[in-house]
Length: 38
Image (cartoon, rainbow, N blue to C red; front, top):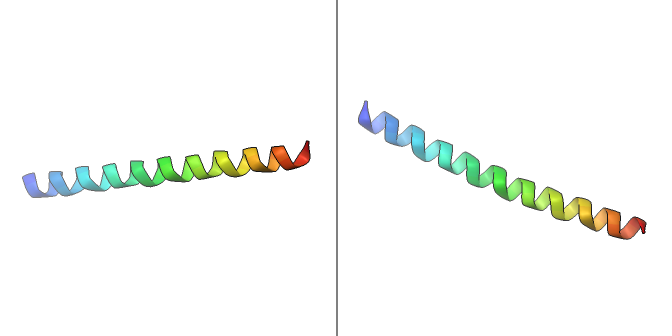
């Protein structure tokens, strides 16, 4: 049970990291597009 819980926590942390990186990339990409449109 404890091992499963640890594994679950690691997965949640990894998902958050991936999501954060994805969001940052998305924001950067959108700002670049807006800059091009000006």
